Image (cartoon, one colour):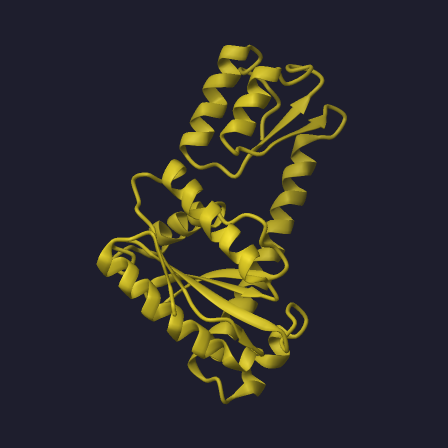
Length: 231
């Protein structure tokens, strides 16, 4: 987020967005109307070409109020994500104990619908400390587009996990292919290997979906290929 102070020329803005893109930033919000009256077309085009979200808010909206609101929303979302992730781990580890996870997931997912698991592997995940792994997870997560209310992303047992609910095979294929493309462009320093499990009905079969994805990602990592689907 910037008011534009110190970035009120095209060259300065170009330097800023280039750095943000190289660092896999989530996006840029520009407070327009004082230091920057409008974002130059050249900067908009760069952001579009490099998949860097760019938003503007009028000067009348105080940037401190906006940051407070965004911080609160992030905190609330992280709390919900942790609750969901813990319930999914219970479903993976103890599928027969449905009372431990079904009610927890019911407000967020169609628990009777389809579930599929995608696992992501990278060198040295197990040996990373929590902060380093969270940073990498964040970089990976922003490459997963078009997945909001019907999915969840978390770390478990040596891999990053993506669980999708009521997503068609075509939709998932597009999400995964896009994620691989963006990861190669934005994270060329960290090769990612993907394993996709079989689609199952009902959350009680999430464990089966996970273990099939685990077999696929282990094979992808061993063979050093981008993606393997469990067949």
